[in-house]
Image: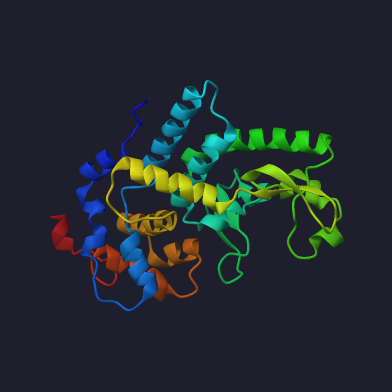
Length: 272
């Protein structure tokens, strides 16, 4: 068995303050979202979790006698994207190639919660691996097209307005499924995006293997994204925009998780 590059248990040991943020939050609050944020503030996950998943997948691939394939690394890349962008799981899985702007370092989330679009950052450390991943996805797409497939479902009535758009590279999923299916209405051979349960199982397995005794899910990474931005000192309105919250009071949840006062303000005497 190959030892993971970074153990989540080690990260908890080296970051005791972050690891206990969930226990410092107020316990009596009827707001389900706030309770979820308290329960989900496993701030020791994120990039270390990606490293754990990545190396665990590599170890499995070597044990099977073959190189690591895209399907083995895609869940790890999705998880790091969740922590790096603050997106929800389905928002990340529904990303299309045209939604990722490497030049502007932006990710556009389409039809997020509340049926609204928003923009968030593309982490610099993800760009190289994401480009490599997209190169593999494009090669797969070209093979699909050559075989008479290569279609994806389009939102709304775009498929009727632009009949060939469903085969264009820009509309392909960033994280496509491993299998194709035949659409009953059109007869097209299509690919859906990666199913959310694939990523959820990877997260659950890594959490169990890490030995961290905390209840967490993929959505925990979104909580950690918001908590760490506020902890670093970013303006709450900026965090609200990145998360896509309609009301800033929802974003204020994370200032309570930080347990540093309603506005997360640090007294100047503490800097002396």
